[in-house]
Image (cartoon, rainbow over all chains, first blue to last red; front, side, top):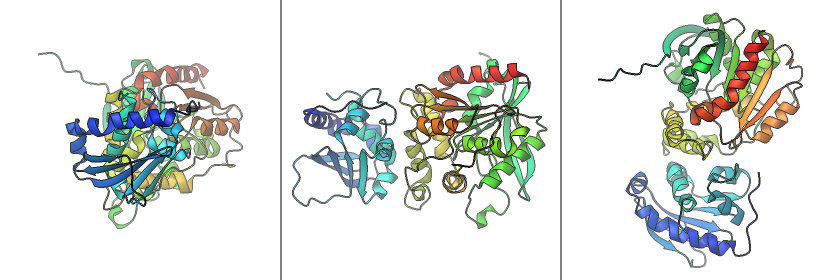
Length: 137
Length: 285
Protein backbone atom coordinates (compact mmCIF):
# COMPACT_ATOMS: atom_id res chain seq x y z
CA UNK A 1 0.00 0.00 0.00
CA UNK A 2 1.22 3.51 -0.72
CA UNK A 3 0.41 6.69 1.16
CA UNK A 4 -1.38 9.40 -0.79
CA UNK A 5 0.92 12.06 -2.28
CA UNK A 6 0.66 15.33 -0.33
CA UNK A 7 -0.94 18.37 -1.94
CA UNK A 8 0.99 21.70 -2.26
CA UNK A 9 -0.65 23.13 0.86
CA UNK A 10 0.10 19.99 2.83
CA UNK A 11 3.16 21.41 4.57
CA UNK A 12 1.25 24.26 6.15
CA UNK A 13 -1.53 21.90 7.20
CA UNK A 14 0.95 19.50 8.77
CA UNK A 15 2.76 22.31 10.58
CA UNK A 16 -0.54 23.54 11.96
CA UNK A 17 -1.39 20.06 13.21
CA UNK A 18 2.05 19.77 14.81
CA UNK A 19 1.75 23.10 16.60
CA UNK A 20 -1.81 22.52 17.75
CA UNK A 21 -1.10 19.03 19.03
CA UNK A 22 2.28 18.63 20.46
CA UNK A 23 3.39 21.26 22.99
CA UNK A 24 0.05 21.67 24.70
CA UNK A 25 -0.97 18.04 24.68
CA UNK A 26 2.36 16.81 25.96
CA UNK A 27 2.29 19.19 28.89
CA UNK A 28 -1.34 18.32 29.65
CA UNK A 29 -0.51 14.62 29.88
CA UNK A 30 1.02 14.02 33.34
CA UNK A 31 2.00 10.40 32.71
CA UNK A 32 3.70 11.23 29.42
CA UNK A 33 5.63 14.02 31.16
CA UNK A 34 6.55 11.57 33.94
CA UNK A 35 7.86 9.08 31.38
CA UNK A 36 10.21 11.79 30.09
CA UNK A 37 11.27 12.92 33.56
CA UNK A 38 14.97 12.13 33.01
CA UNK A 39 15.08 13.79 29.58
CA UNK A 40 16.54 17.16 28.77
CA UNK A 41 17.17 17.73 25.07
CA UNK A 42 16.74 20.15 22.22
CA UNK A 43 15.06 18.23 19.43
CA UNK A 44 14.75 19.57 15.93
CA UNK A 45 11.68 18.31 14.09
CA UNK A 46 11.51 18.90 10.36
CA UNK A 47 8.30 18.62 8.36
CA UNK A 48 9.21 18.91 4.71
CA UNK A 49 11.11 22.21 4.60
CA UNK A 50 9.72 23.58 7.89
CA UNK A 51 11.73 23.13 11.09
CA UNK A 52 10.73 23.36 14.74
CA UNK A 53 12.87 23.23 17.85
CA UNK A 54 11.33 21.41 20.79
CA UNK A 55 13.11 22.23 24.06
CA UNK A 56 12.24 19.38 26.37
CA UNK A 57 13.07 19.50 30.06
CA UNK A 58 11.92 16.86 32.52
CA UNK A 59 9.47 15.50 29.95
CA UNK A 60 7.68 18.86 29.47
CA UNK A 61 7.93 20.93 26.31
CA UNK A 62 9.43 24.15 27.66
CA UNK A 63 9.52 25.86 24.29
CA UNK A 64 8.53 25.19 20.69
CA UNK A 65 10.41 27.57 18.41
CA UNK A 66 9.12 28.03 14.89
CA UNK A 67 11.56 30.51 13.38
CA UNK A 68 14.99 29.15 13.98
CA UNK A 69 18.16 31.22 13.85
CA UNK A 70 20.77 30.38 11.27
CA UNK A 71 23.20 27.70 12.47
CA UNK A 72 20.81 26.79 15.27
CA UNK A 73 22.22 24.01 17.44
CA UNK A 74 20.27 21.01 18.69
CA UNK A 75 20.95 17.61 20.27
CA UNK A 76 19.24 15.50 17.63
CA UNK A 77 16.97 15.97 14.66
CA UNK A 78 14.00 14.01 13.34
CA UNK A 79 13.43 14.92 9.72
CA UNK A 80 10.53 13.58 7.71
CA UNK A 81 9.11 14.12 4.26
CA UNK A 82 5.62 15.56 3.88
CA UNK A 83 4.42 12.17 2.77
CA UNK A 84 5.92 10.61 5.91
CA UNK A 85 4.13 12.90 8.37
CA UNK A 86 0.90 12.80 6.37
CA UNK A 87 0.83 9.01 6.49
CA UNK A 88 2.05 8.70 10.09
CA UNK A 89 -0.77 10.94 11.29
CA UNK A 90 -3.52 9.13 9.38
CA UNK A 91 -5.86 7.06 11.52
CA UNK A 92 -5.20 4.28 10.88
CA UNK A 93 -1.88 4.89 9.13
CA UNK A 94 -1.12 2.72 6.11
CA UNK A 95 1.15 -0.32 6.64
CA UNK A 96 4.84 0.53 6.44
CA UNK A 97 4.13 4.22 7.11
CA UNK A 98 2.86 3.79 10.67
CA UNK A 99 6.00 4.18 12.83
CA UNK A 100 9.10 6.40 12.98
CA UNK A 101 11.41 3.42 12.35
CA UNK A 102 9.21 2.12 9.53
CA UNK A 103 9.55 5.52 7.87
CA UNK A 104 13.28 5.54 8.49
CA UNK A 105 13.60 2.11 6.90
CA UNK A 106 11.83 3.28 3.77
CA UNK A 107 13.95 6.44 3.55
CA UNK A 108 11.15 8.91 4.35
CA UNK A 109 12.51 9.91 7.78
CA UNK A 110 15.96 10.36 9.26
CA UNK A 111 17.50 10.73 12.72
CA UNK A 112 20.63 12.82 13.07
CA UNK A 113 22.91 14.10 15.79
CA UNK A 114 23.42 12.75 19.28
CA UNK A 115 20.96 9.88 19.34
CA UNK A 116 21.43 8.58 22.90
CA UNK A 117 18.65 10.78 24.35
CA UNK A 118 16.36 9.68 21.53
CA UNK A 119 16.99 5.95 22.04
CA UNK A 120 16.93 6.24 25.83
CA UNK A 121 13.42 7.75 25.52
CA UNK A 122 12.34 6.19 22.26
CA UNK A 123 8.77 5.31 23.20
CA UNK A 124 8.30 8.79 24.68
CA UNK A 125 9.33 10.37 21.38
CA UNK A 126 7.23 7.96 19.34
CA UNK A 127 4.22 8.86 21.46
CA UNK A 128 4.92 12.59 21.35
CA UNK A 129 5.43 12.70 17.60
CA UNK A 130 2.33 10.61 16.95
CA UNK A 131 -0.01 12.85 18.99
CA UNK A 132 -1.41 14.61 15.90
CA UNK A 133 -2.84 11.28 14.71
CA UNK A 134 -5.54 11.56 17.34
CA UNK A 135 -7.01 15.02 16.94
CA UNK A 136 -5.05 18.24 16.99
CA UNK A 137 -6.69 19.80 13.95
CA UNK B 1 -17.22 -15.76 45.80
CA UNK B 2 -16.96 -16.53 42.04
CA UNK B 3 -14.90 -19.55 41.05
CA UNK B 4 -11.42 -18.63 39.84
CA UNK B 5 -10.85 -19.15 36.11
CA UNK B 6 -7.96 -21.60 35.97
CA UNK B 7 -6.55 -21.93 32.47
CA UNK B 8 -5.81 -25.33 30.89
CA UNK B 9 -2.13 -24.48 30.39
CA UNK B 10 0.32 -26.68 32.33
CA UNK B 11 3.92 -25.54 32.75
CA UNK B 12 6.83 -27.91 33.36
CA UNK B 13 10.62 -28.07 33.11
CA UNK B 14 12.76 -30.51 31.19
CA UNK B 15 16.55 -30.75 31.12
CA UNK B 16 18.05 -31.41 27.71
CA UNK B 17 21.60 -31.48 26.35
CA UNK B 18 22.25 -28.77 23.76
CA UNK B 19 25.67 -28.64 22.10
CA UNK B 20 27.13 -30.53 25.05
CA UNK B 21 25.60 -28.35 27.75
CA UNK B 22 22.70 -29.21 30.03
CA UNK B 23 19.85 -26.73 29.62
CA UNK B 24 16.83 -26.63 31.89
CA UNK B 25 13.98 -25.57 29.66
CA UNK B 26 10.57 -24.33 30.65
CA UNK B 27 7.63 -25.31 28.48
CA UNK B 28 3.88 -24.97 28.58
CA UNK B 29 1.36 -27.29 27.00
CA UNK B 30 -2.35 -27.84 26.59
CA UNK B 31 -4.58 -30.11 24.53
CA UNK B 32 -4.26 -33.56 23.04
CA UNK B 33 -3.58 -34.88 19.59
CA UNK B 34 -1.14 -33.80 16.93
CA UNK B 35 1.89 -32.17 18.55
CA UNK B 36 2.20 -28.49 17.64
CA UNK B 37 5.50 -27.02 18.81
CA UNK B 38 5.61 -23.22 18.93
CA UNK B 39 8.68 -20.94 18.75
CA UNK B 40 8.59 -17.42 20.15
CA UNK B 41 10.16 -14.32 18.60
CA UNK B 42 13.63 -12.95 19.40
CA UNK B 43 13.92 -11.37 22.83
CA UNK B 44 10.58 -12.69 24.04
CA UNK B 45 9.23 -15.95 25.47
CA UNK B 46 6.54 -18.60 25.23
CA UNK B 47 3.85 -16.37 26.75
CA UNK B 48 3.27 -15.15 23.21
CA UNK B 49 1.30 -18.35 22.62
CA UNK B 50 -0.93 -18.19 25.70
CA UNK B 51 -4.05 -17.48 23.64
CA UNK B 52 -3.41 -20.37 21.28
CA UNK B 53 -2.82 -22.66 24.28
CA UNK B 54 -6.26 -21.74 25.62
CA UNK B 55 -8.14 -21.99 22.33
CA UNK B 56 -10.36 -25.06 22.40
CA UNK B 57 -10.72 -24.95 18.63
CA UNK B 58 -7.01 -25.75 18.55
CA UNK B 59 -6.46 -27.89 21.64
CA UNK B 60 -9.24 -30.38 20.83
CA UNK B 61 -7.08 -31.69 17.98
CA UNK B 62 -3.58 -30.52 18.88
CA UNK B 63 -1.21 -30.91 21.79
CA UNK B 64 0.11 -27.35 21.77
CA UNK B 65 3.57 -26.89 23.29
CA UNK B 66 5.50 -23.64 23.64
CA UNK B 67 8.91 -23.41 25.27
CA UNK B 68 11.25 -20.66 26.37
CA UNK B 69 14.60 -20.80 24.60
CA UNK B 70 17.55 -20.90 27.03
CA UNK B 71 18.25 -17.31 28.21
CA UNK B 72 14.54 -16.48 27.79
CA UNK B 73 11.49 -16.44 30.04
CA UNK B 74 11.79 -19.08 32.76
CA UNK B 75 14.60 -21.03 31.06
CA UNK B 76 17.96 -20.17 32.58
CA UNK B 77 21.07 -19.94 30.45
CA UNK B 78 23.36 -22.96 30.81
CA UNK B 79 25.90 -22.88 33.65
CA UNK B 80 28.81 -20.59 32.88
CA UNK B 81 26.80 -18.12 30.83
CA UNK B 82 28.28 -15.19 32.72
CA UNK B 83 31.67 -15.71 31.10
CA UNK B 84 30.76 -14.92 27.49
CA UNK B 85 28.45 -12.89 25.27
CA UNK B 86 25.23 -14.64 24.30
CA UNK B 87 24.80 -15.24 20.58
CA UNK B 88 22.15 -17.47 19.10
CA UNK B 89 23.55 -19.39 16.14
CA UNK B 90 21.66 -21.41 13.56
CA UNK B 91 23.46 -24.51 14.85
CA UNK B 92 22.36 -23.85 18.44
CA UNK B 93 18.80 -23.03 17.41
CA UNK B 94 18.38 -26.19 15.33
CA UNK B 95 19.95 -28.29 18.10
CA UNK B 96 17.59 -26.80 20.67
CA UNK B 97 14.46 -27.54 18.67
CA UNK B 98 15.54 -31.08 17.85
CA UNK B 99 16.51 -31.68 21.49
CA UNK B 100 13.07 -30.56 22.63
CA UNK B 101 11.35 -32.80 20.09
CA UNK B 102 13.41 -35.75 21.34
CA UNK B 103 12.95 -34.94 25.03
CA UNK B 104 9.17 -34.67 24.70
CA UNK B 105 9.03 -37.68 22.39
CA UNK B 106 7.20 -35.72 19.69
CA UNK B 107 6.37 -37.83 16.67
CA UNK B 108 6.68 -35.66 13.57
CA UNK B 109 5.21 -32.54 15.17
CA UNK B 110 3.89 -29.51 13.38
CA UNK B 111 6.39 -26.73 14.01
CA UNK B 112 5.24 -23.12 14.06
CA UNK B 113 7.71 -20.29 14.63
CA UNK B 114 7.47 -16.52 14.50
CA UNK B 115 10.16 -14.10 13.30
CA UNK B 116 13.46 -15.81 14.20
CA UNK B 117 11.21 -18.83 14.73
CA UNK B 118 9.94 -18.37 11.20
CA UNK B 119 13.48 -18.14 9.85
CA UNK B 120 14.50 -21.38 11.55
CA UNK B 121 11.37 -23.04 10.20
CA UNK B 122 12.74 -22.34 6.72
CA UNK B 123 16.12 -23.76 7.70
CA UNK B 124 14.46 -26.89 9.07
CA UNK B 125 12.30 -27.25 5.98
CA UNK B 126 15.51 -27.29 4.01
CA UNK B 127 17.61 -29.55 6.22
CA UNK B 128 15.22 -31.69 8.29
CA UNK B 129 11.81 -31.52 6.62
CA UNK B 130 11.22 -35.25 7.04
CA UNK B 131 11.11 -34.81 10.83
CA UNK B 132 7.98 -32.65 10.72
CA UNK B 133 4.34 -33.17 9.74
CA UNK B 134 4.07 -29.57 8.56
CA UNK B 135 5.92 -26.30 9.06
CA UNK B 136 4.37 -22.89 9.67
CA UNK B 137 6.45 -19.74 9.38
CA UNK B 138 4.92 -16.61 10.86
CA UNK B 139 6.63 -13.39 9.81
CA UNK B 140 9.19 -15.55 8.02
CA UNK B 141 11.57 -14.76 5.19
CA UNK B 142 14.91 -15.93 3.87
CA UNK B 143 16.34 -12.47 4.62
CA UNK B 144 15.22 -9.04 5.65
CA UNK B 145 16.88 -5.67 5.52
CA UNK B 146 18.12 -4.42 8.94
CA UNK B 147 16.51 -1.20 10.15
CA UNK B 148 18.60 -0.23 13.20
CA UNK B 149 21.96 -0.88 14.82
CA UNK B 150 21.52 -3.66 17.39
CA UNK B 151 24.21 -1.97 19.51
CA UNK B 152 21.39 0.19 20.94
CA UNK B 153 19.88 -2.88 22.57
CA UNK B 154 22.64 -3.45 25.11
CA UNK B 155 24.63 -0.55 26.47
CA UNK B 156 25.09 1.15 29.80
CA UNK B 157 23.39 4.44 29.05
CA UNK B 158 20.14 3.12 27.55
CA UNK B 159 17.72 0.90 29.49
CA UNK B 160 17.67 -2.40 27.62
CA UNK B 161 14.10 -3.39 28.39
CA UNK B 162 12.72 0.00 27.50
CA UNK B 163 14.58 0.35 24.22
CA UNK B 164 13.85 -3.23 23.11
CA UNK B 165 10.13 -2.66 23.65
CA UNK B 166 10.20 0.79 22.07
CA UNK B 167 11.94 -0.48 18.96
CA UNK B 168 9.50 -3.32 18.39
CA UNK B 169 6.41 -1.31 19.37
CA UNK B 170 6.10 -0.13 15.78
CA UNK B 171 5.89 -3.73 14.65
CA UNK B 172 2.53 -4.08 16.41
CA UNK B 173 -0.31 -3.08 14.09
CA UNK B 174 -2.22 0.10 15.04
CA UNK B 175 -5.42 -1.96 15.06
CA UNK B 176 -4.22 -4.41 17.72
CA UNK B 177 -6.04 -4.11 21.05
CA UNK B 178 -4.19 -2.02 23.62
CA UNK B 179 -4.23 -4.80 26.20
CA UNK B 180 -2.48 -7.24 23.90
CA UNK B 181 -0.14 -4.60 22.45
CA UNK B 182 1.23 -3.73 25.86
CA UNK B 183 1.36 -7.34 27.03
CA UNK B 184 3.47 -8.08 23.96
CA UNK B 185 5.78 -5.16 24.76
CA UNK B 186 6.07 -6.21 28.42
CA UNK B 187 7.75 -9.42 27.24
CA UNK B 188 10.44 -7.31 25.60
CA UNK B 189 10.80 -5.16 28.70
CA UNK B 190 11.50 -8.31 30.71
CA UNK B 191 14.23 -9.80 28.54
CA UNK B 192 17.68 -10.35 30.04
CA UNK B 193 20.47 -7.91 29.15
CA UNK B 194 21.79 -8.53 25.65
CA UNK B 195 19.43 -11.43 24.94
CA UNK B 196 17.42 -9.73 22.19
CA UNK B 197 20.68 -8.55 20.65
CA UNK B 198 22.09 -12.06 20.91
CA UNK B 199 19.06 -13.52 19.16
CA UNK B 200 19.45 -11.03 16.36
CA UNK B 201 22.94 -12.37 15.70
CA UNK B 202 21.16 -15.43 14.33
CA UNK B 203 18.75 -13.27 12.37
CA UNK B 204 21.19 -10.83 10.85
CA UNK B 205 24.52 -12.60 10.68
CA UNK B 206 24.18 -16.35 10.89
CA UNK B 207 21.05 -17.21 8.95
CA UNK B 208 20.93 -15.41 5.63
CA UNK B 209 19.07 -18.06 3.68
CA UNK B 210 18.93 -16.31 0.33
CA UNK B 211 19.76 -18.81 -2.36
CA UNK B 212 19.95 -21.65 0.15
CA UNK B 213 16.38 -22.91 0.18
CA UNK B 214 16.42 -24.97 -2.98
CA UNK B 215 15.33 -28.53 -2.47
CA UNK B 216 12.57 -27.89 0.06
CA UNK B 217 10.03 -30.62 -0.62
CA UNK B 218 6.60 -29.26 0.31
CA UNK B 219 4.97 -32.48 -0.92
CA UNK B 220 6.83 -34.29 1.85
CA UNK B 221 6.39 -31.56 4.44
CA UNK B 222 3.84 -28.80 3.71
CA UNK B 223 5.07 -25.25 4.35
CA UNK B 224 2.77 -22.39 5.27
CA UNK B 225 3.98 -18.78 5.42
CA UNK B 226 1.79 -16.14 7.06
CA UNK B 227 2.86 -12.50 7.47
CA UNK B 228 1.09 -9.47 8.89
CA UNK B 229 0.64 -6.47 6.63
CA UNK B 230 1.98 -4.09 9.31
CA UNK B 231 5.24 -5.98 9.77
CA UNK B 232 7.88 -3.63 8.41
CA UNK B 233 10.72 -5.83 9.70
CA UNK B 234 9.75 -8.98 7.83
CA UNK B 235 7.60 -7.29 5.23
CA UNK B 236 4.89 -8.98 3.19
CA UNK B 237 7.21 -8.45 0.21
CA UNK B 238 9.99 -10.36 2.01
CA UNK B 239 7.69 -13.30 2.62
CA UNK B 240 6.24 -13.18 -0.89
CA UNK B 241 9.75 -13.26 -2.36
CA UNK B 242 10.62 -16.21 -0.13
CA UNK B 243 7.44 -18.10 -0.99
CA UNK B 244 7.96 -17.49 -4.70
CA UNK B 245 11.24 -19.39 -4.46
CA UNK B 246 9.76 -22.49 -2.81
CA UNK B 247 7.48 -24.59 -4.98
CA UNK B 248 4.28 -25.45 -3.13
CA UNK B 249 4.72 -22.98 -0.25
CA UNK B 250 1.36 -21.57 0.81
CA UNK B 251 1.35 -17.82 1.41
CA UNK B 252 -1.08 -15.69 3.41
CA UNK B 253 -0.83 -11.96 4.13
CA UNK B 254 -2.78 -11.15 7.28
CA UNK B 255 -4.77 -7.92 7.49
CA UNK B 256 -4.59 -5.60 10.50
CA UNK B 257 -1.70 -7.56 12.08
CA UNK B 258 1.99 -6.86 12.60
CA UNK B 259 5.01 -8.91 13.64
CA UNK B 260 3.45 -10.70 16.65
CA UNK B 261 0.12 -12.04 15.36
CA UNK B 262 -0.53 -14.66 18.05
CA UNK B 263 0.27 -12.22 20.84
CA UNK B 264 -0.79 -8.76 19.61
CA UNK B 265 -4.17 -9.71 18.15
CA UNK B 266 -5.15 -13.30 18.97
CA UNK B 267 -8.71 -12.92 17.66
CA UNK B 268 -7.50 -11.76 14.26
CA UNK B 269 -4.73 -14.38 14.16
CA UNK B 270 -7.08 -17.32 14.78
CA UNK B 271 -9.06 -16.33 11.66
CA UNK B 272 -5.94 -17.14 9.67
CA UNK B 273 -4.37 -19.99 11.62
CA UNK B 274 -7.43 -22.17 12.25
CA UNK B 275 -7.92 -22.98 8.54
CA UNK B 276 -4.22 -23.87 8.29
CA UNK B 277 -4.41 -26.19 11.28
CA UNK B 278 -7.61 -27.75 9.93
CA UNK B 279 -5.93 -28.40 6.59
CA UNK B 280 -2.95 -30.05 8.27
CA UNK B 281 -5.21 -32.19 10.45
CA UNK B 282 -7.36 -33.28 7.51
CA UNK B 283 -4.29 -34.22 5.48
CA UNK B 284 -3.67 -36.86 8.17
CA UNK B 285 -0.05 -37.46 7.29
